[in-house]
Length: 509
Image (tube, rainbow, N blue to C red; front, side, top):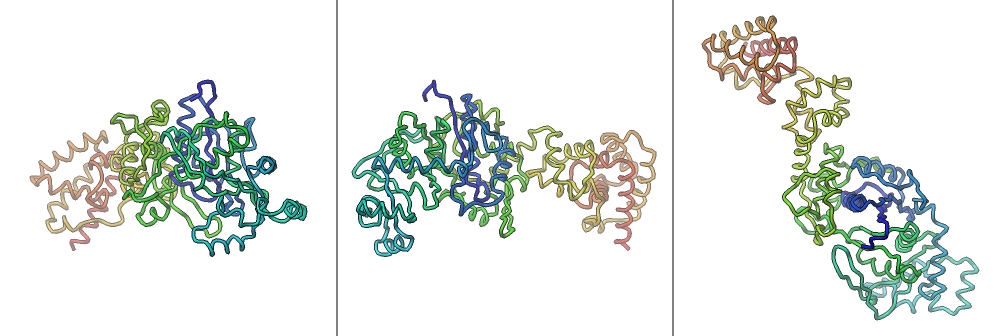
């Protein structure tokens, strides 16, 4: 790495829909590298393909990054000196560069109609527009200059294609993969400028990276086949000495390791692949995301970082600050990383235990809106303290703690009815009355009181502990029963004992 060059990296998504966890990981690795090296992280929106543009997608991308704690130094909403940060707003600059390449003999005009290209594909299996076919097509290399000028003067629709050299090799050093070599005969003449004057990714990404002084490019390995085109463009445009360093990140693979993880795989296997819920503005369909499923951003980021990277130790839990401190290119794997949803949930469980009760409560509170919109903060924290060990997802909270907020509407009585008798009815009637005057209302004191009452009754401990739990929560679940009673408070505990006893007597009758 050139020590004198300021580190500037970019995440450049297209606003076409939900943000795949692979995209978030690319953003994360860019961000970690920038912050580790006192550099800048830029968000650039690549919206040149207007046919795929989706309303609301850019805002969604911003929200996803913000949720993860990945805050750009420059972006459309935080412009700096290298803007604009949307490619559609940079449209005017691209054609000049494409024309410069044509003038230099490094690119050419192609006038082929869509149906003519389709005919070529029909006639020639595996047709590619390149060194072996370009002279048979309708372009400024195969047509007389006068005809080309006439077509241009008439405003005939056309694209500009790069002219890939013949019988050459292109080599570059990838920061993750080492030396990478391409045979130019195997690379087709990519379109650089479309008929609507909008650039393709190939031209726009090079021009923008140059103008924004990008120093390092981190992107998924699916872009590796495009590298020779981009490297040639840096050279052809006279910017070779300013070309960024490259790093192509390994793929995130399906759980079985066979192929890139896709949304379809998530749908099939029952887990999300988007960072947050994505609602299709046309169909209204909602694709689930990690956030809404109940993941903490700390766990999501931690999980993503370790898909393809580790710090060389056995440490598995990393805060964002720790990831920045320990991140290094040398520890990025060059092979794909299998996605394991059970491991992802493990990270989430561990982070739920790791954060403070107050921090977890802030994430739980919005999830309670449909159940208890005006919940007392201290009460929520006391319930969380008793239940968080049982939480894998934040959304597990209500199923594990609903009885703290509403009394049981049904009781699991099958196991206690068979051995119920008048003696037990008398015991719980007496307990309800004695608790009216009991103080202090603390878990340990309540447990001592209850066990002494059982001892005095002559009955067995096991016969009277389970009924108390069922009266308070409705079933055979929940944390320590006296912690439950202490948290519910005196009035609620006594009320539930009496209602539970009435339900038992009624069922027994």
